[in-house]
Each structure stands twice: as structure tokens, then as C-alpha cells.
Length: 117
Image (cartoon, rainbow, N blue to C red):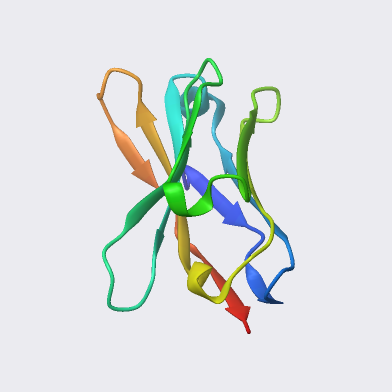
């Protein structure tokens, strides 16, 4: 069973929006801090946004005010709403689930987001 399944990437124009989803198994989700990372070609992977089990969020400076992370504990799903997209947001976005005590760490398969100017 794949622990994390992502969806929602695609090709959009600058200024448009996308919503990414990451569904996890219940046994993982309830114990995990969830995060979205991205990696653009030739660059290191970076944290975009994270959310704790209690709903505390943090964001990269480059996306503050434009992206919103949320989690639906009933659906075992974390979302990333991407608004006002810019070409520099183009990357593979990956979902991450990290045990709140650091016991395990899972990654999704990644979803491509491409923003044209």
C-alpha cells in the first residue's frame, strides 16, 4: 500500500490557482506532521509549507500570502492551495509525512506544477 498519494498538479498560467491533495493512510496521518516540498530543476528541494497535528502552520517566505496548507483529519488528507502562481513556482511538489516523534518519514511520488508566463 502506497502511504501517500498526491494529486492536483498541472499546467497553469501566471496568476492562476491550483490545489494539491495528498491522501494518507489513517495510521500515518494521525501521527504525522505533514508538509509540502518542492524541487525545481537544478535546485535543492525546499520546504514550501508544513502543518502539525494540531494545525500549526509554517511557510517558506517565498509563498507566504499566496499558498495555504490545510489538513482534513476526517479524510486523512492534506491540501496545498496555490494562488497567484508565478513561473518561479514551477517545480515537482512532494508530500511528506513525518512522525511527530521522528520515528518514520514518508514521501509521496511527486506532482508536477508548471506555471507559464
